[in-house]
Image (tube, rainbow, N blue to C red; front, top):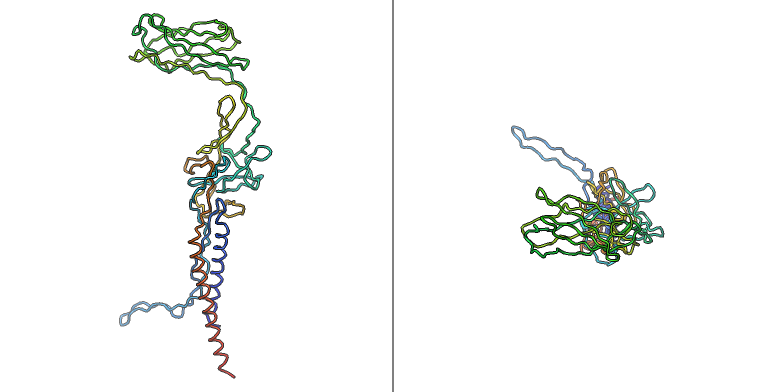
Length: 392
């Protein structure tokens, strides 16, 4: 049988596979996070009719004579190029700008995806459209991300007040200078907010803090000694000294300075917070999930995990916009965003990287290649028919 006929058959099979891949690309042109496929060919076995010969004393060398026996598939590649981001305005829609893959789990099965359309289930667990649980990364450990919309942040009593800014040499001030007064809100042991007046007052060559309870007018003073180019590091007083609950509070003077400027810029910043309930949450560019509470506090609820592979093209497609690790993809290197894994865009989704103009062009070339191979087969058939017709 003619070799050209089998070469044509191999070409038809290959172009049929290429059309299958193109058809899948076009079908997923609007699939979020989809990565297109690409088919490449290579020639198959070659039948050697005459081998090569080296040059001799009286005669030059001769090239080999070979007849190719068709083509075969070389690769079906997955092209993991970055695609454009589409703004959705939905806070749970995430897109990766750069390398990296979201990590999701179903039981012990770990999978990876570029599609970031996530949701909260009835337990507050962050999941994808198929219910696979999105993972966070903390100290080398993967965990489910749970956002409890009914969560409360307990009251934290004030135990430290940080003072910073400038307290100049009192000798540079006018003789009748009294210093500045600042209202400071502190939380006592019962979780109740109390308002105190904190006044910086000159005291000879040094300063003192006068702390006054607005409601009871009870007050106490704390000396602020300046020595060795620094103010005293800390001082402790108890809120019961100004008529409040028994709560010790440390004043931290570490960041107070004494410059040549006579302007008083010292400020007091207490820690502590009232009880608050979770009002909203957002996801930052580095994958941090920040909960905003009614008391004004912001707490990190988790950090989205991103995986990176040495050979992303070696990942195995598992359907549902999912990829699985293979023996040739390399082991998943998992960490948070921003460390060689790109950044996250909240309120956006990554579009498919399928280019319709490119796919239609490839479709035309595949179609013409298929047609050309059918002509090879039909021409070979005509030759065989002539051979058959030699004997009648």
